[in-house]
Length: 406
Image (cartoon, rainbow, N blue to C red; front, side, top):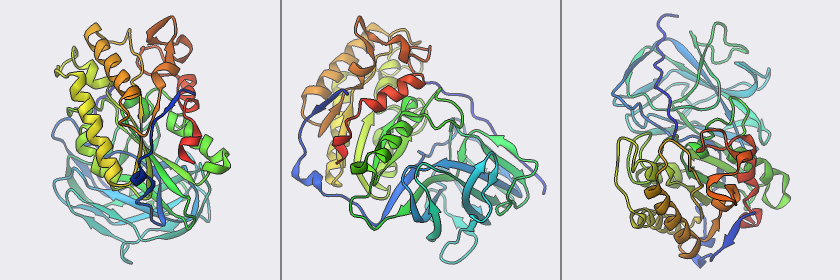
């Protein structure tokens, strides 16, 4: 999928559902009183990269799905090769741009300490904070970083969200004076709310740039997962569920490139999330496309089906109900090929008929042109014949039967 160049920042100084089966064990859940309400899959730069973060504040904006009155934030140094020092961090409701709402700012602590040193490869959760967090709201997490050199800074690229960086410690400031814009999330990959209701839980969507929201617009929160979160909130029977977007642009199931392959990131991006009840997987387009696009990697339909089965088995072992989404059409895209189309059709037929998934969400049939089923309906096509436009993302959400989550 589409992938823009890595940007280094250095600052010095101051309807289409086929129900299958629900195995008895899938009724269990790893639900605790903490439920993820926002997530982003961690990534590492494509090339070995060293950055300087010195006396700077990162203010990062996230759009939560489920509300609550007690929260905690998850920070990550997943791909760092040395400890990450966070000298101070705050959370507040966003007021738009780099501003926060007066009276909502709260410092974050870690076992009571204002600062934390996160080991290489690790994550750290903040202490709980009382914050009245409405559903579908925007939250600002501000991180003050002292001077340090960071190799392979952990981030999530192409956030479709404007974040900010400014010199000095502005973690508690209502506005970040002199801030520059940043188009990625750094060192931040999760946001939890505490819920006492037993129905509360998280739906994870594991995917590539289509799930990540490519071309959905900057600061619009119009990824297909955002539309789904809105539908869930409007429906009384599903209003206790969140949606966690674990999409990575260019991601594949079987091979690394943009982010780790789906099999290798499953434990971190799915099993380690809080309160997971359901998983939707929409992957495979990039695996198929790289049959002809460098770096070329040969795959077969059987290999993809085996990978899907591994993910289903691991989800079921954790008590998670898993739904398979069919691979959407992409004829006309730069890496489309007749060879790849045969694999896509074979895998989709397997997804629909194998009975491996607990149910199937048939996005292929929802999005395809009935007269030319290898390509999108014109009204859903962003223009590259690979990614949906805003109407297409909404159509994807509308294809999901909410009864799956009741």
